[in-house]
Image 1: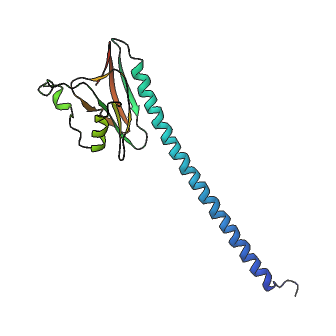
Image 2 (image 1 turned 180 degrees about the vertical axis):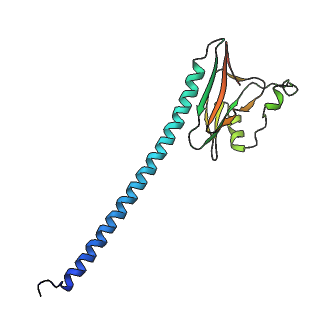
Length: 168
């Protein structure tokens, strides 16, 4: 008779297992939220690094120097576009440069950034685009041009032209 379990013991085991289950679920949820938060911070850091790399690469270009750079796009960034603040009316008929230019971006958010004179590099996203200002930036003949995307990278050519930095 000493091996028999009393009714009170069964109920205490069930309560103990329930508490262990609740604690396990709480630990899993906390771990999931922490990992998700760290992932978001890593994406934010990648974006900050991309902006810093762009500024650094453009600031180090001297006259006659040609750099071909490849930039890895962080998650959420779909491309890099450049805006030239000097308006040219003689470029539309140019046989090589005119057709590759996109002077009329259809996205109204990008249109707002183009209208803003303090930013000239647009990092396109699905939502609100990020942007940066780079001094001395010029395009060949367009006022707005996006770098070609290959996978999750874009490649651009930077040419030092004295007072200006030409982007292709």
